[in-house]
Every structure is written in C-alpha cells, then in structure tokens.
Image 1 (tube, rainbow, N blue to C red):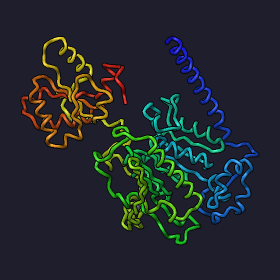
Image 2 (cartoon, rainbow, N blue to C red):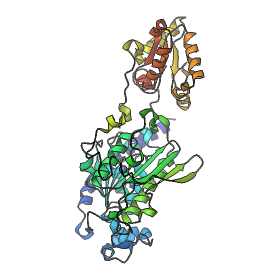
Image 3 (cartoon, rainbow, N blue to C red):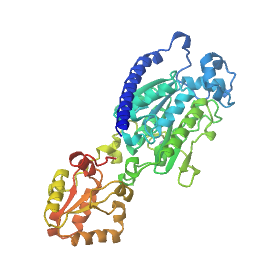
Image 4 (cartoon, helix red, strand yellow):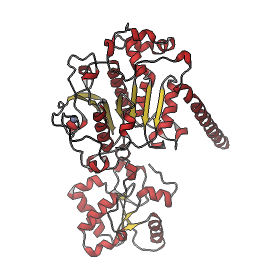
Length: 477
Ligand SMILES: [Zn+2]
C-alpha cells in the first residue's frame, strides 16, 4: 500500500513538472511559429477565394509547396479532389473554431493535421475534470488552465507549422465582428443558443460561411449556414446563397426547451463524430467543393443510439429573413442573451424565485438534520428533484427522488403533495445548483394550504453548496 501511495505521489510530481516544461516550450515555440524560419516561409494569397484555379493539382500555386509540406500532407494531396492546389489553399486558410470543447477539440485537431495555416480558437472557460471524457485536446494536467491555451498547446504538438491564435474571451456583440473579420470561415462548436444567433448574425454581416455543429446525449447535428457561391469559382451559379440560421429558426426556442451537456449528459464519441465532420466540411469548403457536395441546405442528423445517419433537406434561404435577405432588419449585432432569454454561460444561471423564509442554507440544513438525529423529532423530508441517474450517482442520505421532469405528470405531482401533507416536519427541495429545486418548491407552495407554506424550503445553491460548505467528500459534477 505504502509503495502505491509513494508511486502515485511521484507520478503526480513528474506530471506537474512535465506540464510546466511543456508550457515553457510552448511559450518559446509560439514566437517561432508566428514568424517561421526564412527557409520555411511561404506565402499564399490571403483573403482566400474558395476553389480558385479549379481544384486541379498541377496549378502553378501548387509548385510553391515546400518539400516538408509535400511530405507531410502527401496522403491527402494524393486525393484528386484535393491535390497540390487544394493543399495550398488549406495552408493559406484562416479558420475560426468557436468553442474548445467536445466539438471544437476534434474539429481543431483535424484542421491542424490537414495543415490549415491559421487556426483561431475562442473559449472563455477553463478545463475541468468533467470535460476530459470528450474534450480530448485537454488532459488531466490541464485542469484549471484556460481551454484555448490548453488546446493551442495540444494543436501545436500535432502540427508546429500551424499558427494558432487563442482568443480567451467570451464572444459578445462587442467583440464578435472584430474577431471573426480576421478569418475566412467559422466553425460553431459552441453549446448555447445566444452564441448561435450571435455567430450567425456576425457571419452574415461579414459574409463568412458558418459550419454549425451540435451534440447532446446520443444525438448530433451538422449543417453549413450562410454559404455564398460567389466566393467559389467552381460553382456554376454564382448567385446561389444557402440559408442562414435565422432563415430556419427566426426566433429562439423557449429557454426551458434547450438542453445542455452538463444538465442532460453527452456520450463523448457523439461530439467527436460531429466535430470531425465539421472539420471535413471545412476542408471541402476551403478546397472549393461546390455546394451540392457540401452540407449546404441539408442537415445531417446522427443518432448514436441506433447508429444511423440521416440527411434532412432544409428550407431554402428565406427572401424575407431578418438577417440575410436583401433588406435585412438586422444591420448590427444585438444583445443575444436578452433576445434568447438565456445565458451564454450556463454556470451563471442563478434563479431567485423564492422568498428568503422559504430558503435554507447548506450549513443550516446540516445542523437541522443533526438535530433530527439527536432528538426523536420526525426527520426532515428531503426531496431531491434531479433526474434518476443523477440521484443514483450521489445524494444526501435519506433523500427521496421526485425528478422534476416526472412532476409534469399530474399523478406524480399529486403523489409528491400527498407525501408533503402526510409529513409533519420540514420539507426541503434539493437539486444540483439550486434552480430546479426553487421551481418545484414554488409549484408546491401554490398547491398547498397557506399555513403549510412555512415548512417548505429549498436548499440554496443546491448540492454544489452542500459539497462546498458541509461535505467536502460529496462529488461535484
Ligand atoms: Zn437568413
């Protein structure tokens, strides 16, 4: 046993040391990559037009590929649809990946592998242990580091010829145009509705195509918005424009209809598959595939549960679209959190629905429960409203489970009311962060007699507060 502990400590120290050295190396190499050595410098036309010079592999531009590039990218240069000219375009491309998470990690990896010359990464978040099962550019040693920096280091390890620009910011209407205007193409690898509308409107204003991916639970989706044939010489009809996000979804869904990986879960390979396909569409788009071969006007839907891919035809561009029509209503960026009535940062959601007398802190609840044990008083009724899998994962001892979703059924809600009425002690509602518990407590307060209301409370800050203030062994997820 002693030897195991000793080895684990030694390994942890070595990891820390390795991490520090990698950081140092990354910082040193960063400058070399931004300014390549003279013999490695090669320039391609910036302000790239997709599909210039017809995708043929004997175009003049291709002859300028340096030897290392030919060797390194030979396996894809061999593809007739890509060729030397396609590789030259990839090397000159500037692609922005918004979100360095489950979709962004695989997407950025393949873009880097393929030699996309300049990759921008946007994320404001830091790496936490719940990310690592799917966000494979981040490792255990990166916990607490900014995701864009951790991902930039990993990309640099894959391909040191690629310039990576980390944008450690939360994209907003104040900075989106400035950031996006430096790129030819944007990959939406974000996880929330306000950012989707923000990216769409910014990309429409800047005439930049947007490759949009999403993944939740066992399902994923992928399509390209705001595609313009005028930028692609391989297109027969240069006037063709694909739909934008607003052409299909003019108004945002109600916030309660939107799920999230942190609340609903996600199986790692699902965003892995979608992010990888986003990179594939990006490569095809940069190389100059015409829209008929791209996911333009079509949406790919992946169902991991029964292992099926489906393609759904989308409505064409809406001539009256508020964003991309000839006479758009949206001529500048908006406040997207207000427009969508939801936050771009899920962690910030902090509802204050209940009156102070109907709330209880974790420390107060803990001492109440202790009093219960010491006296013969009827035990506090703890109603945990999280989903069943969450309840099985961890719970406060003695709690009973009434998942919030099941309470939509009248029968289930009546059962809960019955349990509350037949209990003579305090009732406390519990959830993960203290939002859902308030929603259920509020419904109960409206349904029971007024004189009963005094004994209804919710645990302020939920199980996160419990883990912080009462039981440090309680898992935070
Ligand atoms: Zn539109």
